[in-house]
Amino acid sequence: MKNKKSGLLTYLSKKIDTSCFLLIMVFFVLAVLPIACGENGEKNEEEPIVPVTGISVTPDVVSLLPGGTQEITVAINPENASQKVTWTSSDPKIATVENGIIKAVKEGEYKEATATITVTSVEDTAQWATIAVTVEVAMLET
Image (cartoon, rainbow, N blue to C red; front, side, top):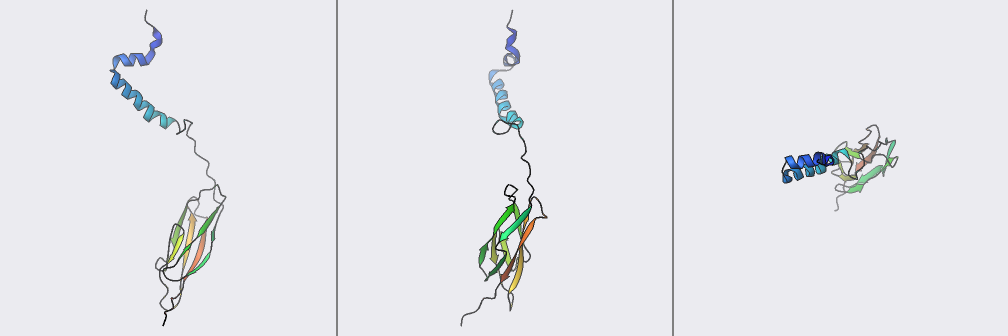
């Protein structure tokens, strides 16, 4: 009498040649198991989203000459909330912003020019802060 403990793997290995059987097993291990389990072998569970309750910026008022830059520090509360933000300028012809660094582009024709930089939470667009930017008129030396 044959041993019935051999099971499905033995049956499949007899019906399919060895290299094909191994290929199927490798596919299963590499493709199916990571979907069912997380990277560390635990079940995939989403981390809870912590709502943003406030954003503050330092400094919140900036005066620059054309071509000048100023780095802005952002504090998002609570600290364990998403730290992702977007930056926008009310007038990119006067001041631009990229990753928290403001650059003064140009002053007004005869007087200083102003723009507002806004930093907004990606998770909650109702949470934002602003920086008032003044680009001063460059004085010509005589």
